[in-house]
Image 1 (cartoon, one colour):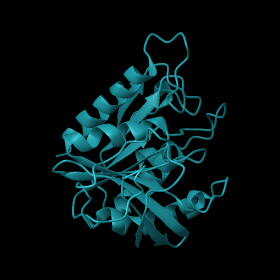
Image 2 (tube, one colour; image 1 turned 90 degrees about the vertical axis):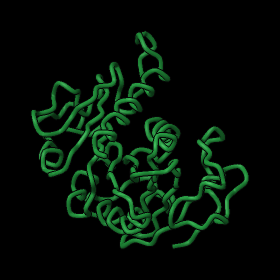
Image 3 (tube, helix red, strand yellow; image 1 turned 90 degrees about the horizontal axis):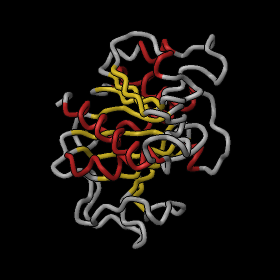
Image 4 (cartoon, helix red, strand yellow; image 1 turned 45 degrees about the horizontal axis):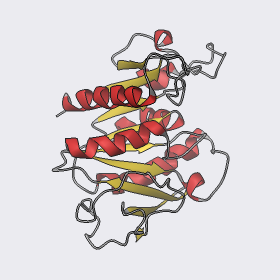
Length: 246
């Protein structure tokens, strides 16, 4: 694994972790870009090089690993909100960029290749010696559901789980969600065209609705809550669920 400066392309308001709080497994003097001091490491996998950006928790009891979707990266609003808030609550957040994103490709590969990349990153995620919660948004949520049990995850967090393609409810992916075999939380926008909360089948998972949210948790202008309130609701719900896993 190589440790390098924080990746270029992060927004200027991306969450910053203090340099003295280096994650377990990374040296305190790991190089950082002065503009983006959050440490990250490049991890070789069977699908190419992946990248993990660490947001170290205060006296962490667990690592929450979050993968991105097929249409975006770790800059997604829900991933960033969790990376900002959870470290102060005792959870280290590891944002995982799949090899296809690191390589600059615009189209995600097949699910099997995504799973290969995630499996390859897992030893780095487990290196701190803490329980690891497998998570992600959209396609990343599917990866976490498919692989969580085999990798020894403590639980699964599925953000914007794509229950079906928009307008195609007959092409359900519920089997992936129902088959995790682990404590699972689904966080879903109330207006998500990939599956509204009411469409989800009964099962052992918990489900948190973000009212009016779409697949990226964006809200219509006339929604009675603003984006900050929506992300606060998401963070509080995930924090409460994580606390129940301790």
